[in-house]
Image (cartoon, rainbow, N blue to C red; front, side, top):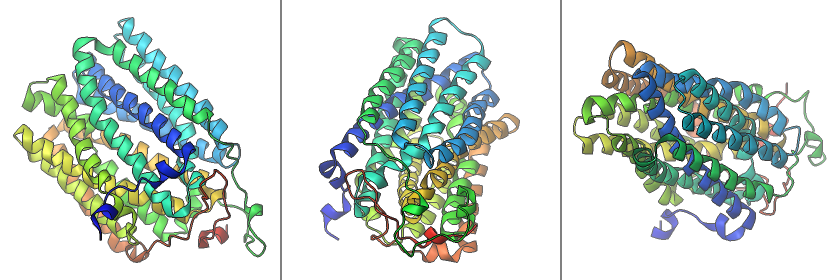
Length: 436
């Protein structure tokens, strides 16, 4: 393979102005979100000095993601997806403003802080399933994986930049400034959403003659359970995130081993981003793979092992190296999972299936953070990290062994319905005729 083919594929940015605008806006929002993640972690720790409460951030985020993410999936298959994302993004901006106000007012209630975090997560959850369908609607089929890789690189860059900036902002101007940056970034991303073309969900009746359905349309979960490749891919992600998510343990590890400096706390998140960004920049080799499901299996196993290593690491350089390795593995797993799910799901099911992807991909880590904080509160943070990482690796391998279709799956680049101009062509995947 030529070197340039191993580099990230930027055709989606060159060929689609709409996707390019969306990518820039989402990148800004991600930076603001990462700044807020560090601010919330540090503020909760400062208020409580308890790993149980930092773990509760995951619970406050995970519950609305679970409930409203599924609602958002149903809405994404019933209303114009652009309008839904507009409303959800506006709600996120208002929640970010409320976080800024509580910090400026000197709030000492951790309950109020977590309630605002939950409100922001709920708004994000309502729009996330619809937002996940945008690349496959805006891009040609052979560029969908590349578009997802570009989005992931932007997210990893935000994880690199955001926490580092957050550490400096918190040290200099404290919490109100951090939340104000998030509010401005979210508002900026709204501009790109406003400029999107209308995106009504396609219905099963829009399919060509001869492509009828056998029975009533099933919900997202029912579709997934009837498709071994889909449930296997989701199972891998769920095992990796619920069992081995480390972020809630960062403040405790930072205080135990590195003196509690907020700049070091930011470095933990940035280290994950360094690995993820590096893997993303060389993602061309991944997005051109026809064995993406197998790549996801390998990457998710490596994620768990790397986090187990972080739990054992003493020197800062070794801890950061383990987190960078975990970030690289996570990027490969996210890209391959996202492309597989979007390409294997017909458009009139994508909102509901994407809602499940969102719930597992976002609520799963938050529940994993709560699990990690709870375990650390009765044992220790290093033990919680070690046990969780090893358990995640073992669970991922078990899913692979139990699901031969997933291991053998090959992606057909002809699948998909994007044509690069915002209109969708009918899906041709076998899942189009899934019965109730």
